[in-house]
Length: 128
Image: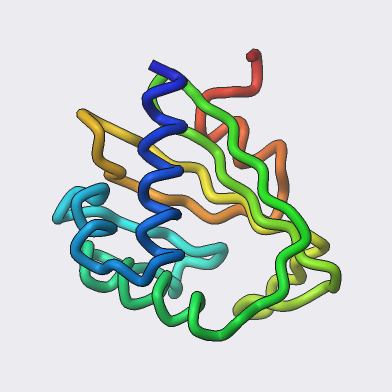
């Protein structure tokens, strides 16, 4: 199941890379919730999630590396940037971690974390 969840995330990221909104949407549950690092940052539909991911793709943000860890019920995806940046008043030091819940091949929830250990706990990976 971990491998399958990794493949779901890779498929989603590839569709975003190609700017293929329809293909990317196939990896998202229609009622997905994406909770940002603060309560005010939230997307409550596949359309909102796609708008955000595709908008950020167009920003041409520099990324040093990616990390993807499979879990039984999801995955953790992280991207690393060469600088410190801020999201809604939260300082991000080098990486943003997305804890994803995946059900039946679709991403149902994304939770953003500035701390790797928090993301691993959210994805139930702390003991793996």
